[in-house]
Length: 187
Length: 184
Image 1 (cartoon, each protein chain N blue to C red):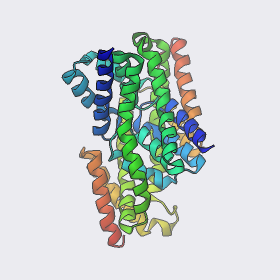
Image 2 (image 1 turned 180 degrees about the vertical axis):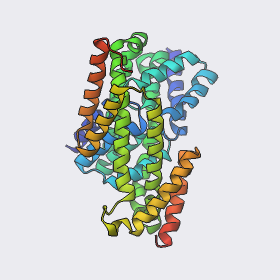
Image 3 (image 1 turned 90 degrees about the vertical axis):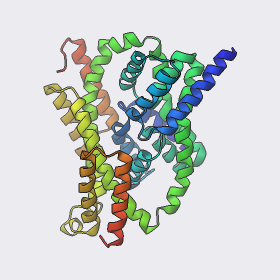
Image 4 (image 1 turned 135 degrees about the vertical axis):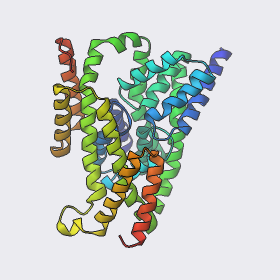
């Protein structure tokens, strides 16, 4: 049953991601690849779409994967799944948040989770790096292909833009524009 | 009764605005929540907002959803939480649903293919930037570096399940805290 599978998968994603945003990427990557719902490149493309449309990344990707695999009903199931764990946990915690916040157990867990999230984002960066820069692998021929050279040029410029603290949406628009120019120039 | 209904509708609309006008999600929406709920509606104090952020950080799920549920529950009970959460999710849901059909259709065009090739490299830069700032905010120390390294190597090179890594690191922090050792 595809709808139940979507609900269950996104329940897991909602329940096991802390910090939101890119911290969710590694788990989403793993789950989406395991089900064959999106290719690695499609997932990275969608990260860009999600940055340029309103709303939280988790909700956007859930809606998208749900719609792609099972239409509107799939989108509802996946979005419900990703939202439900936070909703339930917050309802439970809201009444006693002072105690929750100051509990040494919660602080202990978080002291382990925060470094884990950094490691997980680094791992996401490696896999996005492979997809973005080396789509054809690491052979000498692939490294000198227009795909890799063009992507490397865009990446270097984007890093510069990011260091200049340009807004993410501007970086995405610029990288798209440079990609189009390079593409039509044969790179 | 009528007042309650008014609060719920107002929560729904306010969070729909927040959901519709924050790009990138997460912390991008905090300033907007502050303007709407603290300054305009005066539903929450600045201190409440800080608490919401702290809670959202230490509970699973998207920060936007956490903040909406928390604020909704405080102001309008269970039904308020439902309205606020539905409000914050609905705009992205509708926009992405409409967009998903179009994305597939345009994907084959060369211009779109080239654009996405560029965009993937741009996203890589954005992720590296996020990684850098997360690293800077993270508490440092031997145990902390060990967990960072371990979770990176295990997931990037050995295909370890992310959920297992998260449970393991959380449990490690918990045990250390309960046995009285602080993680530096």
